[in-house]
Length: 125
Image 1 (cartoon, rainbow, N blue to C red):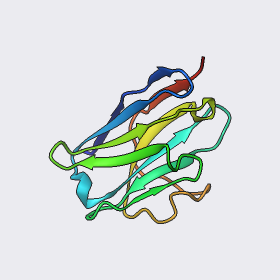
Image 2: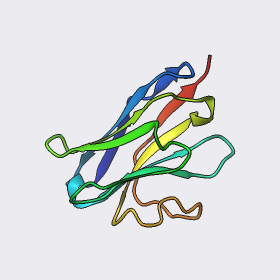
Image 3: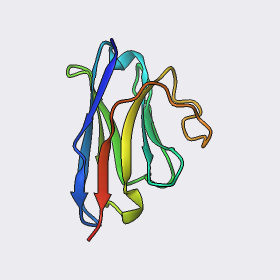
């Protein structure tokens, strides 16, 4: 049974940092593309970042490029999202999802695959 568990969310001031974790069981993350997406209240899901299977190429939405870093620890079967210089607009529930490839994850109509329960990130002073 595939399970993804997100953690690391919280309340942070603008300019602060958080690191989200996505611990996977029932699958080996390095064999899949792993995506972080977010959903703010009243808004559509938004692809944030993706790390590809194998060589671990990384991709980012323009809104987070240069501030967020996605990484993968194969030994821990866990994917991370380091979020720096957070802005109020980053406030959302963040989810990790399993995909075959990173292709299309930034498409607003992208149908994300299996994901976990999410981690709330609130950026506010």
